[in-house]
Image (tube, rainbow, N blue to C red):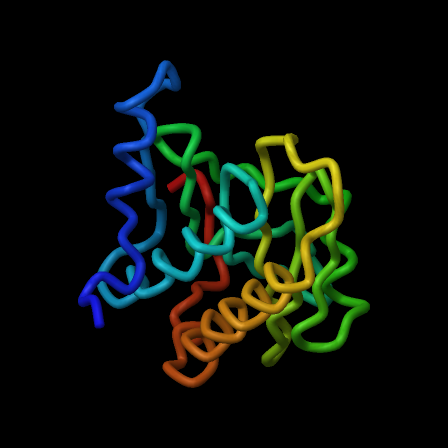
Length: 169
């Protein structure tokens, strides 16, 4: 058995061995214990053929603008923290664990809700995927999203969100 369960160094070497630009990875909001989100987010981004993974939240009333919680960006450094509002209403209409495959635009997974916040996972960018997710990738993504939801709610990371969170800070 290998000690390298998921070796992301292979991802970084891929760009160095070809004409592709060198691979990069930028994290935003992943300080301290929040860094635990990096590996499942990276794997989701890879499976979805996306460029960016975001754990985000929005209020159920009042200011409903989406706010990033953790961002992993494989295309830009610093990580892009701007969030689209058009696709995010799915997160409020779904049951926990529901995955909305937006094909070339990415995917959205509803993670859950607590108090007046709805939590989602967004994988977007790249625009190269032209077919729906393979069922095995879909299952893996839902499993990894469940890991992210567990981190949020069982470790109470969601309690660390300030009411006045400003994504530009």
